[in-house]
Image 1 (tube, helix red, strand yellow):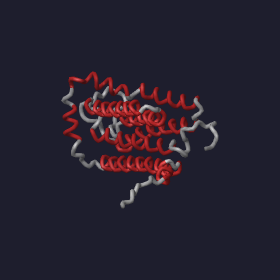
Image 2 (cartoon, helix red, strand yellow; image 1 turned 45 degrees about the vertical axis):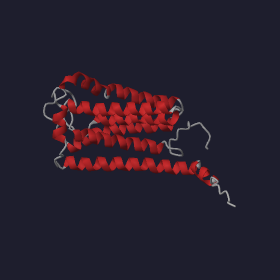
Image 3 (cartoon, helix red, strand yellow; image 1 turned 180 degrees about the horizontal axis):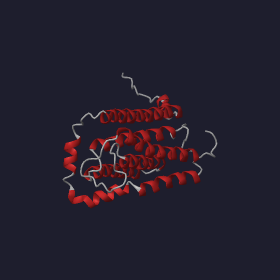
Image 4 (cartoon, rainbow, N blue to C red; image 1 turned 90 degrees about the vertical axis):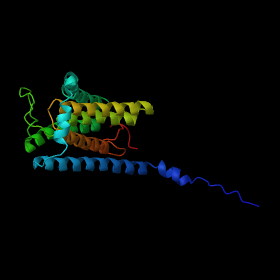
Length: 238
């Protein structure tokens, strides 16, 4: 005679997975790790460039990108997409959050936009890295190269939009599509800036790290239970 031994699912496992405190702690830790990784990468790369230590991949990748002259018009269009239109999108998002009563989140996004822009220009002045030779000297604001403000702002603004969509949209296919489009846009902007001889590859890499810092800060502050949780300001405490 054999005994039919069945494994009964432990209800505590399901309770643990659905525990809001567990979800909040996991979210907090993940965003904090992302924030710290971005800071560490950006600080390390800034030290290397400021110390004038040669970066082995800069010259080969810059030379390769300069051979893609057949797409110069496309590179310029992509580069411009991360300029004035991106500023309008960012400020539009702040306005939308404010008027939909998500004012803490609007404040977070506004502060991040200011920090990203001012921080990029401040680091440019601090490091004082000249642009690659061949840059058009008549283009305004091209004195210094490190980091790439276009990549930094594109990843920050489009990334924030992607995070909001991921949290709020129900259809997984749509969420993955938005993340893919944002990733593709940021990568193409980075390639465009190098192909136009406006930046070294390490400049755009620093822009990526800076964008990761902004996304980590946004995600951490707007996580469940965070300072600017997605719940509107007028909603009751949960």
